[in-house]
Length: 171
Ligand SMILES: [Zn+2]
Image (cartoon, rainbow, N blue to C red):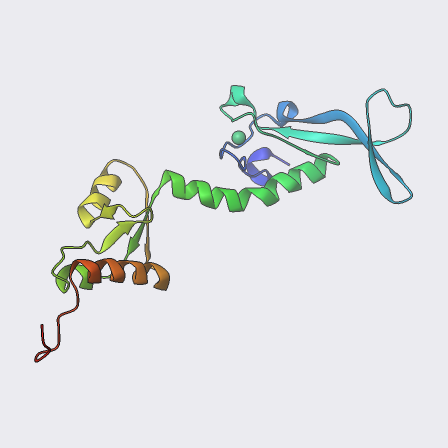
């Protein structure tokens, strides 16, 4: 196994461990089973046990110092890899600006000059901002708004610019 092939990026910071001889090592704690229950024993305990392993995100390699341990070498690796995808998705959205497209109607029809793009944190975006980010080498994750988000912006629009009264309605 080479780290680049099968070891995922650190679940906490995204660093990919480089030197596994350094990053992956037994912790000194071992485990053993008594009547089906797993116990952990220290280095000085004379009883037999299976070594626990630790996988560290090494700071001298540019990592964050996070440490994960498991009841064996393979287990700690699979734990690390299992954990990676979910957090990586979250990290990805930190690096890239996540922008939603709420449709052109807000701008063209509402008379409020609302943008058709908003960052997920509610900041107004527009196509010029997207171009600016891309020019600066910054990623933009652009996706259609969910129904929930759309309802939120519809409410804002209607607050700024209430739907026109039907002709003939008393004002
Ligand atoms: Zn890390």
